[in-house]
Image (cartoon, rainbow over all chains, first blue to last red; front, side, top):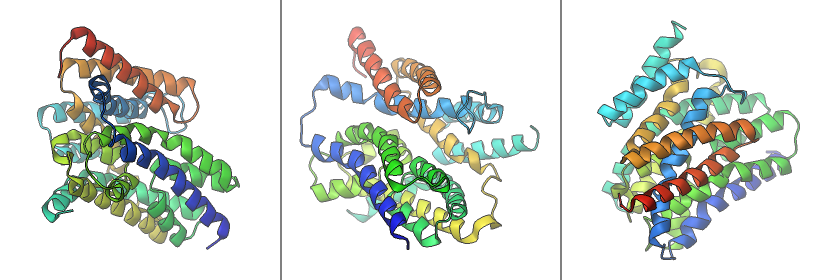
Length: 105
Length: 228
């Protein structure tokens, strides 16, 4: 194994563990005020929304471009999940629709 | 770490496994093309375990960029985990640093989102989160080593596989809609993430969106004077 790649992997390992570890290790020992607690409750939906929307409206090169293939697969998954809260079902349904669209579009 | 919780967590990870295997394979194939050995691919997936950063590292390696800029880029890409780790910290308030270290080392966007889909299951139950995360990382390592080893034998873009992780994220997003406030925060976060991504380089849009949308969510909730 090349030493430069080993340094790279260890370096990447260290900088990825820091933001994962510090809040969990030290905020757990701190009593969080109610207002901050309410705010943290909106973090999951904000992050998920910020992950999903760009997938639908940006291409792989990072340019603005509607992704009809993704968008058309996303809508039924959204509705299905709203009615039937099943992670497995949604993922399999999404893959099937995407796969099916691949032979049409 | 008692067993039934670990098993329940591992079971909850199955949708993530479905997404990680093909994406991990894609990573393995590309990493081999960029000159990494199968062992190096496996070691990176074990010690770094961050999808976006690993893909960007491969891209930078193939352009001949040295380790230091890649490590800096990795640091900034993963700053978003600060927010997820802060959120998770609410649910683990009487555990040893060792347990918290183990749990936080395997935090990813996907495992965080699945953990948040039913917080009653993770609250002071490290075994559940551990099972969820170990299973996810095993899938990531297996996918990337498999991709590096078998190379082009399997088509990782077939069978709707590219849409596995987007479906998972959409599903988890829907599960987070608990009140009308959440719905408005969703729309606001979605639109602002598009603007931030368009206007700014790199992955800053996720952190900025989280701050903006969370701040506005707090304002809405305080203004209405009601609690969820």
